[in-house]
Image (spheres, rainbow, N blue to C red):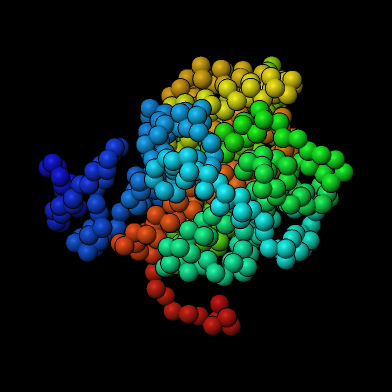
Length: 428
Ligand code: ACO
């Protein structure tokens, strides 16, 4: 391998492939001409070694436990910034000035209402429908309402659809919750923050005033920051793949929501809390650790392990601290938090987890806070979807703006029957 190219010898031919460097992180071997030159594909199910795009949004160093958005460390953003500011940063590449932030927040606030006709959709769902089922349907349906922002070739329409999606997700998620508990929908209020407004739309009832608790508002805003983007994860790649065909942004985000729902991805926060409930008390932890290590048992420690982080997920550090702040403010405790802390301690001192580099991820503690705030477990993944929408939209927009963008179309290693002749049913 020379300085700027890799050499592949497939047994019959030697092929040189350029090596490209990003601003930080591993170089990539550009294999785009490989098939043309060798007649062979690469094989990488799960994309463990494959970069699918150029991106200037988010950088992760999984070995060091580093997460940067547009260069800024997640710990600093969680500590000092707001979800609105991080959204602006992800969408525009730079932190906003005070005026730009005020203008952006105003724009998002003014888009929080949904078309009144959309509320009729909810009545088509069973009351016990999972909020993610409702979110998939309702977000996909936005494209039937906002025709003036579905021309993806027009940057202005892309911007408007991005603002609409970010602004309406809290309304849509809160409506999903309200519908499930049989309470009337609460309309957004423009004098509240993005997160305060969401709390009110979720928990207020017409019978009394609702006051936003500033500690809870800040904690939830921080949770939104922690979930805002995470480079080319499964749901983001889904959004990009859906968008690569030219589908409209609302349809693409609905696809992302569907992917996020799975327990190996966004559904892990719900699964992690359910697991902690099942474990119950710390004395039962060793039994569950033994199960997680047993190759014949499908049980895994939910909220543990990550495709990219082979170190402590920096988001889990912030999350653990936030649990304490929320508990202090609400003057509550949750024995499950003690169970979680003990589980983490025991797992991190166990050779199985040490060798496999399995650490708590963002979902390990998030369920405990969300539950303390009053969200039912079924809403956890919906909250994740709400926050991740800005990342999805920013990544989708980055892809559409790339002049070299192509439809995403992986290859395969075919293992089915070779060509054979059809046999009529009477002769089979
Ligand atoms: N508990 C027990 N063992 C685990 C766990 C776990 N949580 N996670 C991974 N392992 C083991 C696997 O059994 C495997 O062992 P092996 O090498 O002996 O076969 C090894 O660690 C590597 O695991 P893979 O599944 O191959 O790793 P992959 O990168 O494909 O999966 C994933 C990552 C899906 C996150 C996995 O760690 C997992 O299922 N964790 C639990 C679910 C979870 O918390 N998901 C949230 C991810 S964060 C997010 O989406 C926001």
